[in-house]
Length: 120
Image 1 (cartoon, rainbow, N blue to C red):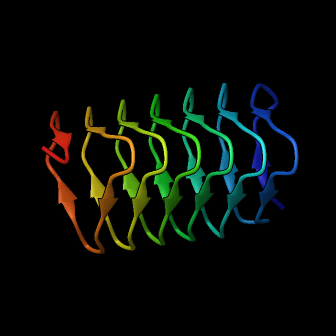
Image 2 (cartoon, rainbow, N blue to C red; image 1 turned 90 degrees about the vertical axis):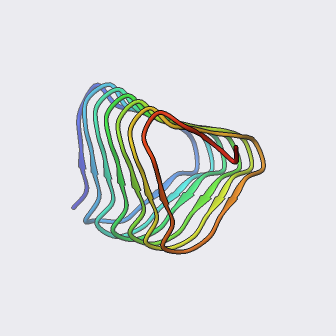
């Protein structure tokens, strides 16, 4: 059974796997799909029509824009902003305080340094 904090706000038509955990004050938009063993930490915002792959972690106070697709085992560290229509491959690590621009495509196994903008 998924663990969803009572202060989390979940939109319409959101599919959440049983092994997913959503912490306090998280906001998730409409028509999202959250895979197996996904963790979304407190005060993160997930836009509409976002897919998050199995084993991914969205750390606290991160913001993911509409129409994004995150692969499996993606780690988005705290206070990161991901723009609209971003595609992120499998096994990607995005360090803290990163801004990913709208429409970016991040290949598998990429590590993005903290406090940078991608693409540069």
